[in-house]
Length: 266
Picture 1 (tube, helix red, strand yellow):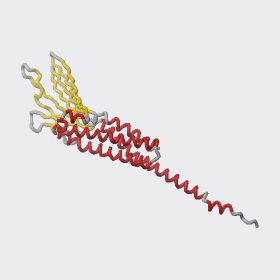
Picture 2 (picture 1 turned 60 degrees about the horizontal axis):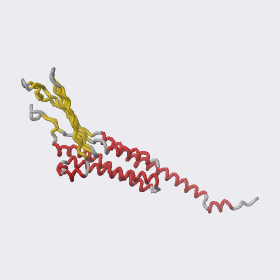
Picture 3 (picture 1 turned 180 degrees about the vertical axis):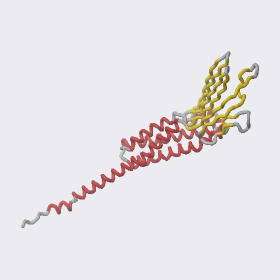
C-alpha cells in the first residue's frame, strides 16, 4: 500500500525524536579586558530520554589559563519518581515522563498499522490505527509547545538571568522561544589584589530543539498518510469497483441469452 511509505518514514522520525532533546536553554557569560578573559557556557537539554546540564568555563589572566567542563544527566523514566521523590516536585521532569509514554504508545500503534498494511488485508483497521497515532502525535507536539514554558517556569522560575545593577535588569522567559542579553556593569572581578572589576555580558537563548522538530515532521507525514494516501487508495478502489460492476453487467446472463437469440433470415 502506498500509504505505508510515508508512514514508515514518519515512524523513523518519531523514533529518533525519543533520543534527541526537545527543549534547550543556553546561557553564556563573557567578560574581558586587555589582560583578562572569562567565558562560561551552560546548556540545558530536556528530552524524552534524558535531561542534561553541561557547563563549560574558560578563563585566562596574565599569570594563569584554565578550562573546566562538567555534565550532569537525569534519565527520564518512571523509576526516577520512585528513587527520587523530589521528581514529583519538578513539573518539567514529570511532563517529560508523560511525553515519553505518549511517544512510545504512538510508536507501537504506528508499527501495528504498518504490519497490518503489509501482511493484513483489513484496510479499514489500518486507516483507523494511523488516525489514532496521528491524533496522539498532534496532542503531543501541540501540548508540548503550549506547556513547555509553563512547566519550565514552574520548575525553575521565569527569571533566566539578572544583574545587581537594577532590579529590572533581568531576562524573563515570556514565550517558549526567545533570545536576550544584558550587561552587568563591573560584574566580574579581574584582580583580587587590587579589586579590579570588568563588565560582564550575559546572553540567554531558549527554544524547542531537534527532537521536537523531528516529531513535527513525523506528525506531518502521518497526516499526509491519512488525508492523501488513503484517499488516493479509496478513490482507486472505487474506480476498480465501478469497472468491475460494468464488466459484470456486460456478462449478465440476460444479456448473454439475448445475444444468443438467432436472427431470422429474410
